[in-house]
Image 1 (cartoon, helix red, strand yellow):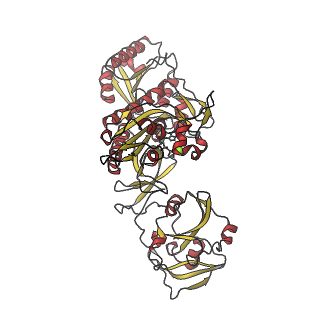
Image 2 (spheres, rainbow, N blue to C red; image 1 turned 180 degrees about the vertical axis):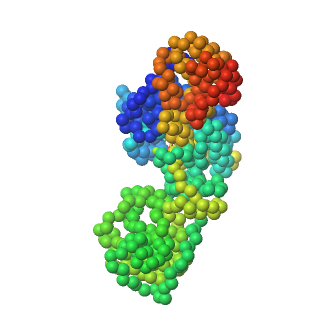
Image 3 (spheres, helix red, strand yellow; image 1 turned 90 degrees about the vertical axis):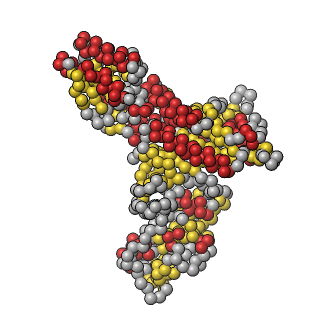
Length: 567
Ligand code: ATP
Ligand code: MG
């Protein structure tokens, strides 16, 4: 491609609302342009990157035996009624009516449509398993579309759905998809982790998220410094922490006057006891459908409550903050809550199992209990509800845990019969009985990957594309287009590289060198060839975009050198 003819509208100014590098550089580099909040056009360079991502995803899925389909983007409300999601989905689901007053929604995900496609057409266990996917537009009317392609309203997703005769076969496919996703993200040239994800209160079924590691990620993930354990903090487990030295000794279990002291920090100073030996109480309002009630969670003083883990432990939809008067109404003494004699439900963190000689609230204003012994508490009251911390111990191997940020680019999920049962999609099994399909679902954020790649790979000048998804591999920059020798050498090299199948652009614009090299750095082609003054001495420069290092080479060697680099 000749940049003199190309539609690559680069810009000096970043969009006003842009804070993240991927948003800024993708717009400034002329990859995408905004149409409306969370809706983007893909310009020629952006389209090339998107297509590359798409084709890597497709190749690996096809190799794993999946089949591509393309379903309607506009989907009838009746199907969403059947699954029960029309009422449940909320405002992310964009609904509208056609001229005949039929109700439709723009597909945010396609479980219903895929189940509808398969039911009636696949009727026997002999036709199973089946794994169908599409790479298509999705629309979600996100509450806060932001960060460019990272959280759009209209975006490109690969969504796959598998159908099985039983759980075991579904788990086999799930493992195959995990392997396939790893191949995909490796081929995309991204540093990523497959992390255990929160599966919600229903539990049981497994789910993994694929996270591209990047500082700007919205998710915090816990990764082991030694083995392959990785989990979203919403789901991360840990080996129980080792007790710090110097356990306090109490001769009796008795109330102790602690006037106005409610925080663990104040109490730890007052008693000169490590926070580990305190019992911290966190009272929350738990939501179960339309019902709400107070639940008190107890943790070691140096731990924090993980709301999602805590909600899952009691089967709640979510946990809300409880106001002081609501606590008092429930007979609770805020700031001095004991795990004893509570009327509401209590849950204790696993790290408190068997705890003796600890300090907890006294259920009385200004009093704590010292020398408490929790070893007699019923096993059933304990659950894993604490937030994993940096340097906690890996649940698999015991090595130190590191916290890092990630961007979710993929998600695999053992779905079971949730949709097939609700939508009456059944097959005849070996025993002649009709059974609902057991399903798995697998998503990849194709357009989000484009932004995630830049969040992970950029510097203060612009994008640094991984070779596998770079819009082009090399740019030949003719420093001064009026110089006949420079121009003809650049043209010649350009044609030779094109012939050799190299993805090359020729910067033959009648611009000064400064803006050209700035564009090169902003767009982030992996390599550049600068054809400038050195040509008089028979030299050209090769630039590595990532390191910004320049290599002087004889002009005759340029062609071979580039072939070597882009190989
Ligand atoms: P998130 O927690 O980021 O909202 P999600 O759990 O809603 O994601 P899924 O429903 O599992 O996402 O969708 C599959 C994939 O689609 C995600 O892993 C993500 O990569 C991508 N994705 C989801 N929402 C968006 C969005 N608003 N913009 C771009 N990509 C998205
Ligand atoms: Mg979402």
